[in-house]
Length: 306
Ligand code: NAP
Ligand code: GLV
Image (cartoon, rainbow, N blue to C red; front, top):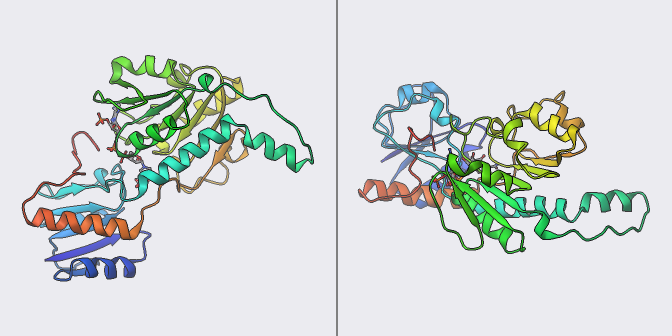
C-alpha cells in the first residue's frame, strides 16, 4: 500500500516516521510533482496539481476538522474524503471557549487593567442567568463545548442543521429556529463548518438579534463573520466585545482594524491545534478499516460541504 503526504506548512519527517511506525507495511512518501500514484493521501492545503496527478486515491485524509479549502479543489471522484474527528481537538476547543466566556463574564480584562494601574477594586458580581451562551454548530466540537459551558451553570443554547438532544443544552435546529436561538443568546460561539449556507452568517442582521451587550467568539472560520458589521455593532454598543481566533485572511493583515479595536481579543488560529500523534493513530486506523471494507466515521459529504 502506498501513502502520499502533502501537507503545506507541516514538517513531513515526524509525520512520515509516525505513519511508518503504525502502518509498517505501507510505503509512505512525501509527494512531489510526478510522484507515482498512491492509494491514500494525507493532506493539508495541497495544490490542485496534487489531485490532478493522484488520480487513483481511495482515501484522502485531511489533517484538520474543516474541509472548506479542500472542497474548493477538483478531487478524484472515487476518493473517500475524511476529516479529523476530534483527535484531541474538542478538549482544546472547550478550554478556549470556556476561557473566553469566563474571562468576559468575570471581567478579568478589567481586573487586569486595574491591577496594572495599581488599583485594588471590586466589581459587582454579575448574574450568570443574564449571560446565556449560544453555540452555533453542535458537531464533534460544538457539542463538547456546549456541554463544558453547561458545567459552569451558564444557560446554554445550541443550534444545528438537524435536531439534537444534549444534556444541559437547549437545542434549536434549522433556519426556522435560528432567530429564536439568536434572541435567546447573549454570548455567541461559532463552531459551524464553512459552507455556502454558513458563509457571512454573522452579519449585521443576525448579530443585531443577539441580546444587548452581546459578545462574539469565532473559532470556526473567518468568512463566517462580516468584519465591518462586527465593528459597527461594537461601535454602537450593541455588542460588548469579541474574541476571534480565525480571520478571512490569515495571518491577519497588519493594517486590519481588528488590531486597533480594544474590545476585540485576537488569537492566531490556535484554539484547537492538530495533534500529530492522535491524528496519525486516527488516520492509520481508518486506512486499515477502509482497506478491510469497514465503515468509518468522519467521511465528508461534498454536496453538504462538511
Ligand atoms: P462537525 O462535527 O461536522 O459539526 C458541524 C456542526 O455544524 C453540525 O452540528 C452541523 O449540523 C452544523 N451545521 C452545519 N451546517 C449547518 C447549517 N447550515 N445550519 C445549522 N447548523 C449547521 O464539525 P466539527 O468537527 O465540530 O468542526 C466544526 C468547525 O470548526 C470545522 O469545520 C472548522 O471550520 C472549525 N475548526 C476550527 C479550529 C480552529 O483551530 N480554529 C479547529 C478545528 C475546527 P448537523 O449536526 O445537523 O449536521
Ligand atoms: C483547523 O482550523 C481545523 O479545521 O482543524
